[in-house]
Length: 191
Image 1 (cartoon, helix red, strand yellow):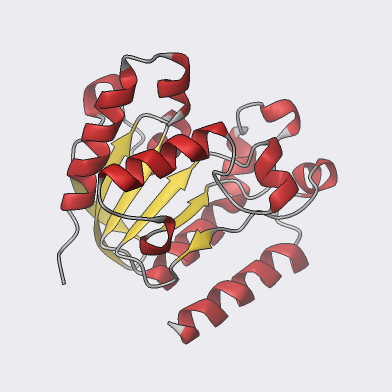
Image 2 (cartoon, one colour):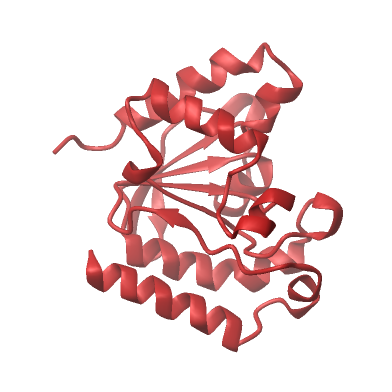
């Protein structure tokens, strides 16, 4: 685990040194790399940091993050059991959707992050995150489905889910997200 933590710290330094996305960096407070266990079986990937995440430097700490905590709890897990990150590591202005070129700029770093953590399961949250790994994704049809494919250096299980914000805007999605997340958590091998 210490080696993985060091490798993630090194990757963080490279993103800053190589100035991965200067336009986004200029408007952001800080890089939001990720948080959680560096040897987690599950990595959760969102789209981009929001205002609160930019302020604190931790992904999913705003309203969507509070609902993500509910989802984790429903699956008998906590943030310490998973690794949480985003495709884009700087906050887009006014919380706009990340642009294609911004996602592309961070893509190689995300793949290296996945390879370092070496999860068995990747849970994507939202359309942007899901479509980055599964370009043909139709979130309304494919949410909660386990898809095996090579990501980084090995085959992994990818499970696209609605973004937790969907439950905040549409209360009827709340239970659906919790159920999908429970099923996704069960897809990881038990030790």
